[in-house]
Length: 381
Image 1 (cartoon, rainbow, N blue to C red):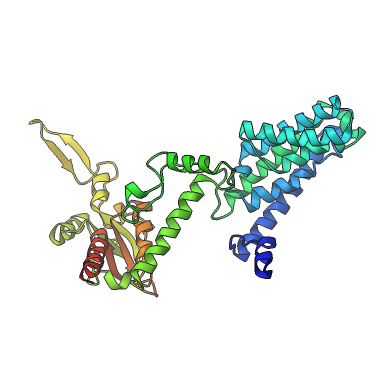
Image 2 (cartoon, rainbow, N blue to C red; image 1 turned 60 degrees about the vertical axis):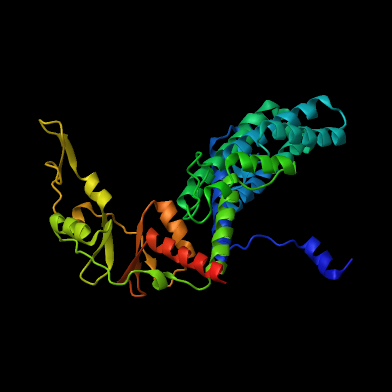
């Protein structure tokens, strides 16, 4: 065997994670375990206060270093530990040989977790500890399952729900978006080429093994890989190369009637709102007018609209503009525009210079023109 092959087998490549994310995971695990032990000692009965299940340390690694994993979700944590603890207790009680009892506890716990869809690796240690923990654990009986393991797991889950949702960029538990709401930019990947839920399930079933990645992450990996491919295809085209430079803008104090005239005369669907320093502070689109319009039927049965509401009476651009505004820098690669348009459901993006001043604007039509020229160049070649 070649040395490089042996090294690749012994030290497989892992996901590239920033130092900041590693530090956040470590600090979160520290805080969660400390809170769990302190709360367990405070809430448990006197005869249970000395028991903290060591496998909770492994669970903390999953909950804070791989919080997106299916093995880290609430049902996997609670169900896995409780089912495994119960199986371990039964094996300890009915199988006299400790070696066979411990092996049976782990094997049966693995089988049960598979069937109940709560696979959680640290729970295997919970099952084994119910057998090899000795007389103090055996004497607890079912209290070990509910008042020790159950309380430990519940406290650790509470810490994960709190910390993972307070930390920026994290969301726990992971939720699969409903059908039709996948965050897949239109135009970047054709609808026919996008993997649907059924496609992913069929692919995983065909592999016939447990893949430790959530469906949402698979879709995001596919999206990011496609964006990266588009960047290679489009070369070095950035926003400044396709943006409209002579941008009409309004101030926050511009009357709504004047804003409407700008949209009508320029035949545009949105106009940036800039402050005295020419920095974008908002965006006024036709949809913003519609949201602040009263629609009534007059006596003749015709639809009549009032551009102002008697209760709120918006009068300036600042009253109806969308803020904070979604903007991109002029050196942003055009492939990133797809995700911006699709994820936010917008049709125009202001482009800013390095100092934050308005430099241009890009619409979906600009992207279509870009790809039209790309297709034309390829056919000509």
